[in-house]
Amino acid sequence: MASPSTFTTLALCFLMTTAVSFANKFNDEFDIIWGNDHAKYLDNGETVTLTLDSVTGSGFQSKSEFLYGKIDMQIKLVPGDSAGTVTAYYLKSEGTSWDEVDFEFLGNVSGDPYTMHTNVYCQGKGDREQQFHLWFDPTTDFHKYSILWNPKTIIFSVDDIAVREFKNMEFKGIPFPKSQPMRLYSSIWNADDWATRGGQVKTDWSKAPFITSYRNFSSDACVLSGGYNSCGSWMATKNWFSEVLDIQSREKMESVQNNFMIYNYCTDYQRFPQGLPQECYVSGP
Ligand SMILES: *[C@@H]1O[C@H](CO)[C@@H](O)[C@H](O)[C@H]1NC(C)=O
Image (cartoon, rainbow, N blue to C red; front, side, top):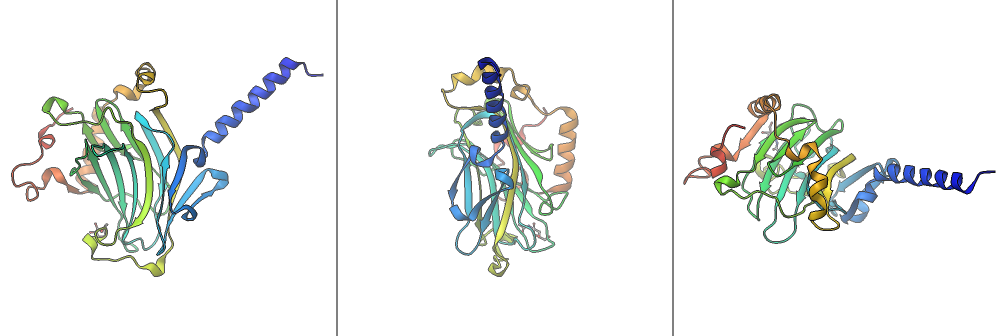
């Protein structure tokens, strides 16, 4: 007969396993906040799909707020004709002076490339767009889109390749997100007034529903529950907390930018006739 302590151990093991396997499930991490019946959990809750049709789009947000961290998600974008649709995937804090780190995926007609749009807002001010085409078709398979955010830098990566870095340049008086916790959001909506070829191509509703899929969310981040101070010592043990791009990753990033970047606010002299934003002049590691 099992002794009470064996029983307790077994029960504990069971509880721990459950916690681990449930930790991967989307509805433990996220709340659907828009278009309820247009968001669906598949594969036993491991995958979620967001749908846009002529009735509504849909979206989710993380239950947790993060202050610094490493966030990964695998996303498969709308296959076929996705013109006019936008899938957004971003970190954002609350309030009128918010911080935000954005990926937005702008659809296209069949066969034409998706545009990956990125932006960084500090204290409510963005205007830091960089856009890319991707080196693969993002609609045929899942790919990993990551944000690393620490006190020194913000790095956007695709399949573990850095594509953009926004460094902390507070020493030049440029604000940097560092005190406002952010939630992770994703949504799909109709933006055919601007998204595809500057709004020239409209959403073809006969091709609806438009569906984006998500899986394998992971976060190694300071989750705010007991206030900022609870994070400090824990974060200091994390490699990513002081990580900056090494030379090889930087070279790879520059090569991606040379080959796949289609818009960079830092070279848009027409848009900034009075001079480019300050951060555009900072170079080197
Ligand atoms: C759509 O395809 C055209 C033609 O290749 C390209 O110029 C554009 O950047 C693509 N993306 C969007 C969102 O329009």
